[in-house]
Image 1 (cartoon, rainbow, N blue to C red):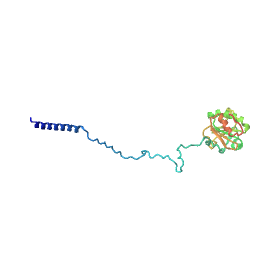
Image 2 (image 1 turned 90 degrees about the vertical axis):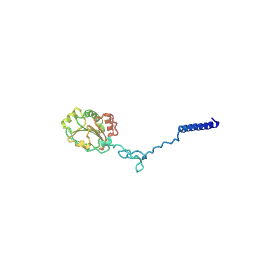
Image 3 (image 1 turned 180 degrees about the horizontal axis):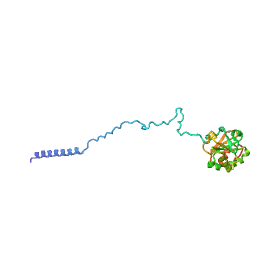
Image 4 (image 1 turned 30 degrees about the vertical axis):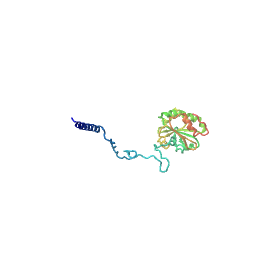
Length: 227
């Protein structure tokens, strides 16, 4: 082989080798990386989602500029209001066990403890002896205690009062008129009326000597009342 031919063949061989290498490089080199497009979310209103039950009442300042009123359950009358404390006592005129009448108007000027009761209520059995004691101890202070039985016959009430040795008058509200006027629905119930005829305290029955004494103190000014 002539030197010229050998050179030509070597040249072609080199070109072929270079082409193979270049092709391999182009296959192995990755193309430019394109960022993955971020999906565009649909626009939504800013703020809380509406409630399916409708809009909630707004909490904010009142139109007058002051604080908004708080929502709270309605409050009924307090215990003192329920007994008419601070107001003139209703009228009370009933027949008295043993004869005569009990008339609150005739007792004006004296502190009066009015007790509405029935012979069938267990607390009355416990309260009568305590009331006896207060009636005797504070008689000199002008105290008058009056028990009013609701819708029972005189014989039954008399036997009850005699059995408990009541030292105070007991009246008969045969038709419940006085009971209704005083709002004495639950029995027994107590009212303490001062000398001017104003109710100063009241309590549902089943009470003890401590509450009796503290209520009496409100209608016996100047007297120290003890249980």
